Each structure stands twice: as C-alpha cells, then as structure tokens.
Length: 156
Image: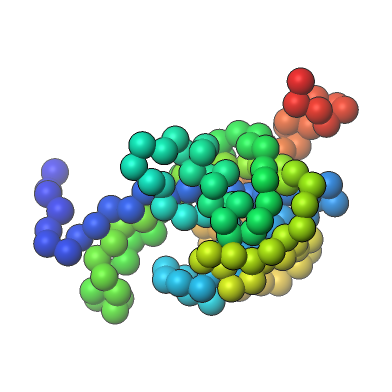
C-alpha cells in the first residue's frame, strides 16, 4: 500500500437522494468544484466528529433549506481527480443515503446555485455523472422496499 503524496487529499463526503410525496428527486446545481455547474445530489464534506447521517441532514438543509428523514444507506461512490485531468489531486469518497423530504420550500443555499425537484423522466434527460444515476436508481429500489415494509408510509 502506498502513502499519499504531497498535495494528495482524501475527502469524505455525504450525499442524499431526497424524495418528495410526488416521487420526485431533489437535485442541486453545484456552484463549486468538483462538478461545478452540474446537477448533483445535495451533499458535501463531513465535519470532524460529525456522524455520516448528521452530515447528510446538515448538508441537505444548508443546500436546499429542507429537513429530511433518512430512510437508509444506499452505497458509496468515489471520484478521483488528478493533475493529469487538470485538477488538484483529490480522492472523494461519497457515502449516499436515501431520504424523504419533510414539508417545506426548496431554497438554494450554501454550495448550491439552484435547487429543484425532478421527475424520474426528467432526470433521464439530464447530463448527470454516471454514479449519480446509479445512486438514484439504487435509492428508488430502497425506497420501494421501505414502502413495501411499511404500507401506510409511516416510520413507526
């Protein structure tokens, strides 16, 4: 195993596939790198001492103004950027959760230039990172399983 070299950084981040009652997904247009100006899942860096779930909840609120209820863990996605690609050497490890939106209005904030709901059909037409598509599809399956285990949609 090799040690990280100078300037190489591993960044731990979280993301959330947030669903509303119309079965739409909340996406943000990123205002900062990586993937600046692209539509993405709300999320960001985990702060020292913060749990992954708390980080996901905080990041969604900061970027969209919404409170969420986390349904479960989806998967992990990774993005490695290096100087050869014209970027700083960074390895992003992104832990993604499935969540339901609590009532409220979506307002873009912090690292989001824009935030809005998209139907699954609209998402198919967006130029998204392949990992974002994979995570959304996995989240849809997880949400369906959650609803099948809880037919009235309540958590308890």
